[in-house]
Image 1 (spheres, rainbow, N blue to C red):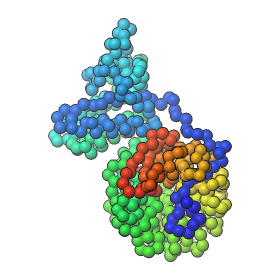
Image 2: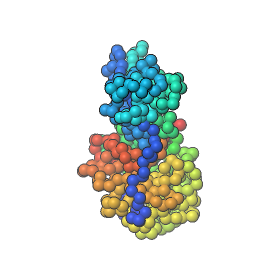
Image 3: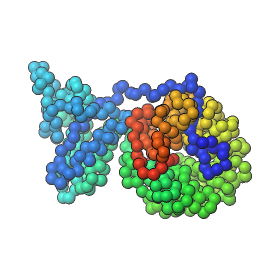
Image 4: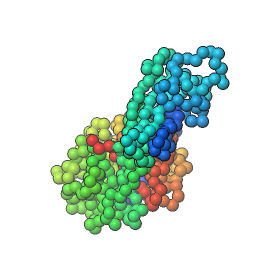
Length: 457
């Protein structure tokens, strides 16, 4: 879909680069830690919900690129549940394979498990609450005592319900991942567009696809959501009043916030500065093709950034530097990805100029962009790519999986959310930033244009 057509917000197509630059999938890190977490058991009323806890922990670890999660089918017969079940030190040489039961930490470092870390624990009910005791241990053979081997031990308290057990599982998995430098996604949200209520409206869900709820109720075309870096404000464009206008909502209260729209046939595609105080958006306020404008978060203090004569849209400000942006521009013909300063100077084309390159999104480290492109290993169809901006090297993350577009990085820099049309309707998917671990988050209606929001600061 080309952005040069003057119909409603057609900026939703992918990106391009030369085939010679495409390097294939990102190399996995062979040195990342191996982690095993056997299923926890629980007593009392907590036993009804411990399976939800276990499946949540396994899913979070399996879907994280920070660790290799060891399949449970490889675990020893004897599963420790608490520190008193464990024995430190290396087993005597005469034990033999039959005697390897799992009560020694080093049992877990041997084949077939070959893990570096072991998570253990159990659940219980305490005063009407779901309580889990969770530990993480190193299985290294050179650690002499259990105290030295223990990485952490914590208590997780939640509501005595399925939702509570899931929440506790997310927090335990997040604490494990934090040991290896991975940021937790717990508390982050994904804002997206869905037609499941009969019209395109803005919806929001938790990072794992749970608690999907409708944010706007206009009964009109409402699209192109963006969220402030502090996680508090969502901006979008709606036709509710006739012409497409920007509106701001509080993600906490769901209430409309003040915003002054310029008199224009089109105001849309908002991006926030890292401090959440200013925005850049596309507008036809100057007449002709939509150009980039900067304003305060309430729409005041407007000034124009670009004057290319071609459509300038999908601006995204580098979250690390706050001094540059990328956008989708038609200044060279078909839409391409360009980089420039916040004042529209030092313009450089990042994409190679072939095909249509759109939907740029900065990684949290400010060194990569994700985008959609019709070239690569499946020419003619939109797919997700990432680019190392310094080297211009690109890597294809999707192919032969339908039409894939509108990628946005997760706050942890390790996941990407995107829209994929593999049948008649588009759905929201998530994958690791190396293209692995793809899984679907939405099922109902047609869902598109996801934006991954930070946890509220």
